[in-house]
Structure formats: C-alpha cells, structure tokens
Amino acid sequence: MESIQKRLRDLSAKLADTWQKLQLDQKLARLEELEQITADPELWKDPQRAQNLHRELSQLTNSVQPWRLLKTQVADLDEIITLGDNELITEAERQIEILEQNLEELKKELRFTGEFDAGDAILRITAGVGGVEAMDWASMLERMYLRFAENKDFKVTCLERSAGEEAGIKTAVYEIHGQNAYGLLKSEHGVHRLVRLSPFNADNLRQTSFALVEVLPVVSDNEKVKIEDKDLRIDVYHAGGHGGQSVNTTNSAVRITHLPTNTVVAIQNERSQLQNKEKAMEILRGKLLQLQQEQNAESINKLRAGESAKWGQQIRNYVLQPYKLVKDTRTKHESKDPDAVLDGKIDEFIEAFLDIAR
Image 1 (cartoon, rainbow, N blue to C red):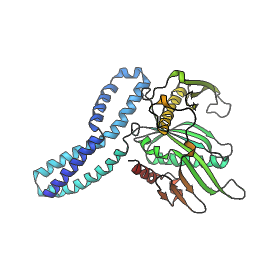
Image 2: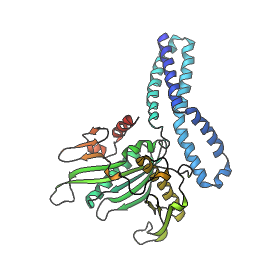
Image 3: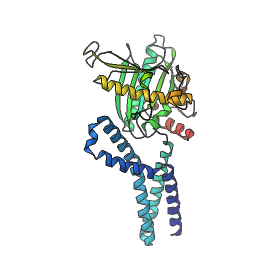
Image 4: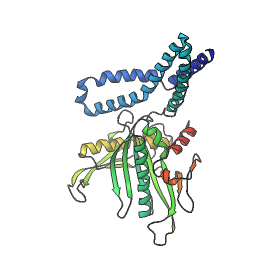
C-alpha cells in the first residue's frame, strides 16, 4: 500500500513539473478564450481571422487534451487508492504503470516548446545542379516526405510544383498541416546528398546528387513578423492553368521580393491573385524567420542582404552504392536500410536530432 502511494506521489510530482514547464494553465486559459471567440458568428465577417483562430483552437485542443485526461486519471487513481480496497489496489498498480508510460510519452512535448513548433510547416524541395539526376533525387525526397506525412496523418497541400523535362522535379512546395508538424520537420532543413549508380547514365557510373530541403514555419499572423510595404516588390505575371501548358492562362501568379534581403517567393497554384498573394506572404514570413535564425539577427529589420549559406549545410548522406547507408552529419545517427528511409521512415533521424537539440 505504501509503495503504490509513493509511486503515485512521484507520478503526480512529475506531472506537475511538466505541466508547469509546458505552461498548460496558460494554454487552457487561451483555449477557453478561443472557444468563446469562435462561438461568435460575427467572427466570420473576417474570414481570414476566423480561419486563423479556428486553426489555433484545433492545434491547442489537440495539444492540451491528452494532458487534461492524464491529470483526471491520476486524480481518479488517488481516490481509488485512498479507499484501501485490496482488490482495487491490484488494479491500481496496473493502472499506475500505464499512466507512468503515458507521462513519459507525453513528456516528448517538451521538445516542442519553440514559438512555432506546434504549428504547420512549409516544405520546399529544390533540385541542385546536375540536371535530370538531381531532379530525380529531388522527387525521391518529395516522395519520402509525402509518405512521412501520410504515416503521421498530416494533411498536405501542394502550393507549387515544377516538374523536370525528362524526370523528377525542379522544385516543389507543400504546406504540411498537423500537430507539431514544424517541430518535427525542422530537423530536415538543409542539403541532402545522394550517392548511387545513375539510372540516367549509359555507362551506369556512380553519381552524386544534391537537393535542398527548406522547412519553414507557417506564420499567418501579420503581427508575428512585421514587414514594411516599402520593403516589398510585388509582380503579377501569366500562369498556366491546370489544363496544361498555355491553357487557361491568367494573370493570377504572384512574385513577391523582399528588397532588403533579396528573398523571392512566387506562387501560382491558387485560383485567384489575392489567394496567391496571401500564400506568398505566408511563405515569405516563414523564410524571413528562418533567415533570422541563420544570421542570429535580433529582428527582421536587422537581416543582412544576400543569400544565406543554406547550400553549404549538408545534413545527411544517402549512399545506395557501393554499400547501403544513410547517415546524418549532425547527430551521427545512421540506418543501413535506405529503402525504408526513402519510404518515409525518418522518425529515428528526427528523434536523434530532437534529443541533441534539447
């Protein structure tokens, strides 16, 4: 009896400590506030604000609900133990073991305490130099991340995709919607290197290819990243519709240039010019935040002009020949099953990164 009471006290103390670190009381207060705001039908007079608030409500609910449930279960178990019924004590011992395991699993949330970690992510894949070989490698990475998102039950929206002339892709941009999507995928930001026997070379020579993966937070709130209008150049140009090349050509495509940093974002997949502009601004805010981290700048206004060193940040090697190995250059974590990795099983690499980043 005394032993199980001590285990429960220890569990309660660990729960209280983690509850405080995750600021769950503040999150619950914000959740209650959001529930009141979103219940007001007048909110939809501003559709963009309504969507942003409903997205925040959904993410916060998914984040907080497991903790509320665990806290209730611990309180219920305390009442059962207090009754002192020997038959119930046996069941309580089994339940406390389950709750201890649940707490350890939930404590992984401590790795996602960054401002944007809990939210959605923008994933941009760009083929490096090397023609069709590099474009094929970019498409292999595209498939890897789409399979990863599918395994996580994340919702994926294609924002931009430029296919290669012979094979693969030049670029692809996706928005990944799901709990901790950015917190998980931010570890993938950097250059990915492939070594294999080329299927596009008549001599079947070994080929090295590179692709850049950019992972950006989705920042819908203008207040989070304030960009001066004078710092932007917005261009509108022709974009082919979904019917194919030169079909349904419209002036809806938008290109936005952030003049101080020469950062360019172009979007043409949305149906209207306004939608393309909103999506381009969302991506631009994410890119500027990423650039701010790379340059260790105090604010967006302190960013330096010119490209960041993003192409120099090689984070992972995928070797298919003469042996099979995937190795992360930062964590030294490796896998001898590149086929599984390229099929979306990248959780071990993400976990290894999150462990050293804590």
